Every structure is written in C-alpha cells, then in structure tokens.
Image 1 (spheres, one colour):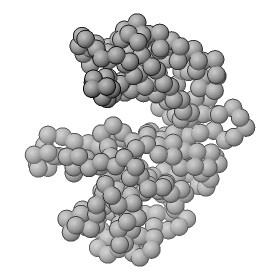
Image 2 (image 1 turned 30 degrees about the horizontal axis):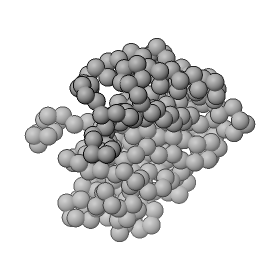
Image 3 (image 1 turned 135 degrees about the vertical axis):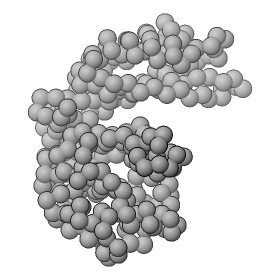
Length: 139
Length: 142
C-alpha cells in the first residue's frame, strides 16, 4: 500500500487528542510481513489497547522521542533526523509513526513506498534516518 | 538508489562557518549558494547533495552571519582522517577567500557503509517528501 495517515489519527487530531510538537512521537521500523497496515489504516474504528494492534513480531526497532526539534509550522510536521541503534531482526519494509503520548498510543502515519533504502536488512548496526526537508507529512 | 548496497559508503559533512567580522558589503544567498555548491561538487563529486542555512548572531552589538553547509555524499571516505583534514583545510581556505576571516567547524558522520572498525555497517533510510500541492492547500481533492 502507499504512504498514508491513519484515519483514526485524523479523527483524534480533530478531537484535540494530539499535540505533535510536545507529545512523545516515535518511529518504529516494521516487518510488514507481520502487520497488515492495509487492513487497518482506514478501517479501524477503535484503538487496540497496548500495541495498537501491531504485533510485537512486526516491531523491529523503536526510536526514542523525536521531539527534540519537532515543528508544526503551517501544518507541516517535521523533526530532526534520528538513528535506530544496533538493530537486528527481520527484513523490514515500512516505518510507522506513532504517538506514545496519546492515551491509546495512537498511530499517525505509515510509510512503505518511496523511502530510499527500504526494504532494509538489519545487520546489528545502526540505521540512520534522514527526514526530508519538507517534513514527515503536511495537513 | 540503494545506499545500503555492499560497496557504497555515504557520509554527511556539516561545515559551520562563522564570520568573525560584521560584513560591510551584502553577501547574497544566491552568490554563496552558487559558489559553495560549485566548490563542494569539486571536493565531493557529483554523487552528492548540499543543504545550506544562514543564521545570524549578535556579537558586541553587531549582527554576524553564520553559514551552515551540510553535504551528503557517496564520494568521500569518511573513515580517512587525512581526507577529513584535507576537506576542513580546503573549505576554510575557500571561505576565507570569499568571506574574509572566518571560523570553520566541521562535523562528519557515517550514514551508510562500513565504519572499518570491525563493527557492522551503518545503514541509511531517506524519507520521502511530504507532498503539498496548491490544490491540497486550497482544500480541493489532490
């Protein structure tokens, strides 16, 4: 499937549940073989407690909070570049952006196309991520 | 492009150029961008891209410029100390020729490839641009 914002994220945003330049937004490297994004991105109507319905097996690496330099200027969400350190696990095909500060750990966005370098095979080393100059997404 | 293929090494070189004087002539963004891009292309090769940022700081009541040039390149061996020193010296000389007395700081980071110290290779992912079109800004269907 294509990169997309989660329907429930948009709903929660309209319901004042996210504060993206102060909440603990994180990025997770995903093994898409263990998580069906296409089946959840627009159809989920309730949050799944805990892991947001994302199987633990699908989570290859989780970033720290990306908020060091997060900005929301003019509806564009942007952060600094970041690194997943000493990553090992399955071949990974996607990146999941989510809000650890949201009551239900709300999923924000899914990226699996046009990310240069994906799929990536973890080798025990670091995986550096460069966020595009135009940010993660724009509303 | 797959930056994580076996024989590639990508690195990021960030040069922070602080003018040590208040300019009495106007240095335009376009002039700096053109000249530095040309210089960096010669230094790093064409498999590179550069981002430029201008900041200003106040020193003794004077506004002084700080330029930050970030180059991501496949061409330069980031693990070679002599290459690092060569690039720092070259950039310093180039900036002094164009801007006068400056202080140049350099930070170098391996993005993808072997660190050549026995540790696993670094890997690199580059996020796509967030798509913003006029139609979307105006609220139409993209």
